[in-house]
Image 1: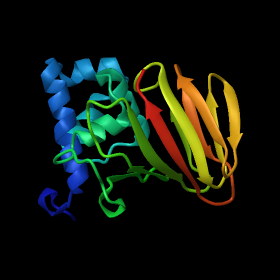
Image 2 (image 1 turned 180 degrees about the horizontal axis):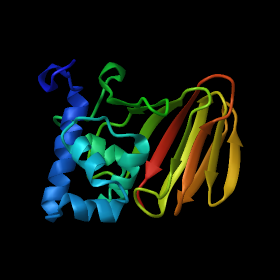
Image 3 (image 1 turned 30 degrees about the vertical axis):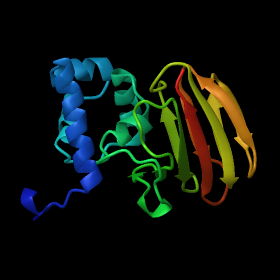
Image 4 (image 1 turned 90 degrees about the horizontal axis):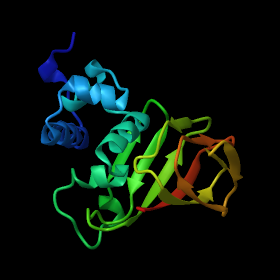
Length: 193
């Protein structure tokens, strides 16, 4: 049986956990208050803040909504120091193993900028649903580099093939699904309202 000290925590997950705990503390919220605001159980929030679990994309999206920031901004806040250039080998990669979603922060992180680029990859059959945008009115441009991506926003489903680009503003629930037999790879350009 593994002991707690034997569990190796991913360094990104550890920094993310600490940042999530800081954001809650900055607002003076208890775990119960955050659970009410986010719709996430206290135990799940506690485990995420202690890096006992790697949060899913959907969980992070809910927390980003509560804290009024994009996922890229949250992830950039766990970076050591903002840079003007981030070589491909040093770009931050985050994986939601439960859903088959891999997210690469392409843009150099900077909290003061309104736009950012993200590379997303979804495994065949992967399906991610977000119940709300991290920031209401968020502008997104989704450009499919390889594969097929189905995006649902405002109850309208869009099927994007290689080379297609969809522009939308996110006000409510969205869903990203890999609609092809293989992985889909896409670029997501995000612009804060």
